[in-house]
Amino acid sequence: MDKVMHFEIPADDPQRAQKFYSSAFGWKANSMPNMGYTIFHTGPTDKQGMVQEKGFINGGMLKRQDCIQSPIITIVVDNMKEAIERVKKAKGHIIRDAEKVGEAGIAAYFKDTEGNVMGLWEPLMRPGQQ
Image 1: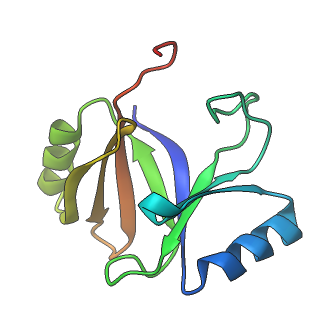
Image 2: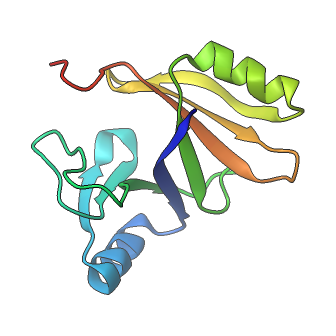
């Protein structure tokens, strides 16, 4: 079973949005300017930024884009190619093809049968790997 592991929030003004979520909810923002992305830590994390207790997930924020207009739930998968084929077979549509994100993983976006945009994530580093 593939699990929800991440959320993304699009923003017109990422700095303003970072301040909002940090102020309103105490989330720690870790900006990655070279990637145009911010990681939100919504609870205690280890040195690698991984969650330390059950019951919460971390998230991210990116500049609002044509295909990313509202918050997105991201699902972790073991094999991106297989997950994309399962989405297509279930009548979903890939709206952003799989692309490598640094050394961390592979990301893609799809639209489900109801028009919701969701994310797929295949980690390249597995827990316990360095």
